[in-house]
Image (cartoon, rainbow, N blue to C red):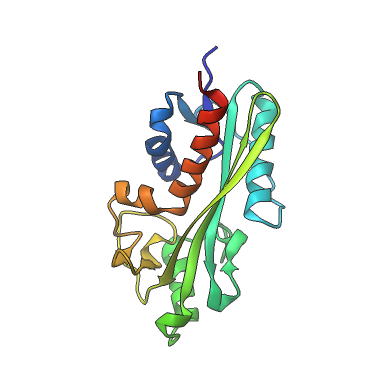
Length: 201
């Protein structure tokens, strides 16, 4: 059977990014939902890497013949002691909209000058391979937290994450440009190199 990549997510916005970045590997890429896996995975790790590996290992136990990838990503704001960090998705409640989450963070940074608004998106990617081995890598993008919510292109915290070198938020970036620079794009390209080496003919 031809190898396939299963990504441990049900997030379709994330899957679009992942499929764009991994398309030239020549392997089909599916979300776990697309292959009928619907499980709740308790992410009880203390780092992005631990949580990504917990997810990848949980799906790998159900699909041992496939290459399983998982990510754990989040926003670290230095002024807030790197919060929301690994709790980014659960910040202010898992079912709270990102409009509200973003507004809460902007309110907490009210009056804080730009030089103290430094932040980064972090993405750890874990892979569990059919031979039982695993790898984890990390990608980051540095920026600052803006003063308002701007941009409809991204999702999550993208509309408040301003990248000074580009002059816009990640929520304003063209998707192709965002994939070049984003924490997930950086992490996936690192993992892609590992997979190319592992599976080169």
